[in-house]
Length: 215
Image (cartoon, rainbow, N blue to C red):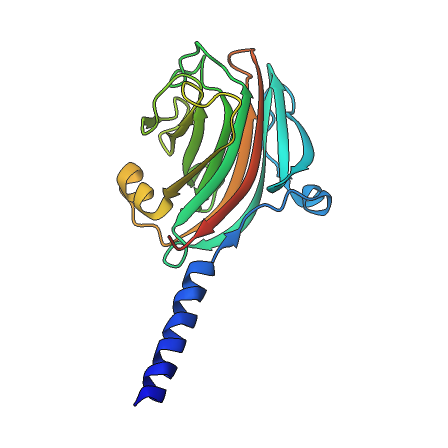
């Protein structure tokens, strides 16, 4: 009886450990990976991306002044297993004073897109744009002024955390239902973007440890 109890307890421990450890890394931010990342549409020029590292691992630094572009990869994330996106990021120089939900001010010092393919063309895709806002409070959200199929959602703000590393988490599965009103079981891609093409200002930001987890 004691042996059976021990065996059951042991396998329960292994199962719980595997669930906790089931993380899906999106970006490694290494030189080899950097060569494979897809450069998104350029807006009046390309963001300057440079690799670096600190005590917490690799990161990528983004600098944009009057321009913007993104870096992304196609990656299938099973949201039934790992619904939470985890992001560590920092904004060194923000975009204070702009109206972020307007076309003239639709810039962010740091943003992470999660994308769900819902049709045969890119225009049919749905996206949540998790942003490090320079002017709004955490939790605020709105449709992109350019397309209703992409929604901006504030996870961090420089009003509280300027030039400070911040780690945030969001339930992507629940957010698609809340913001888009659709049930999404997986996503098709993830991208990072730093852009200032509308405001003509300068932004400097850093991205690190972007991964999906079970909880």
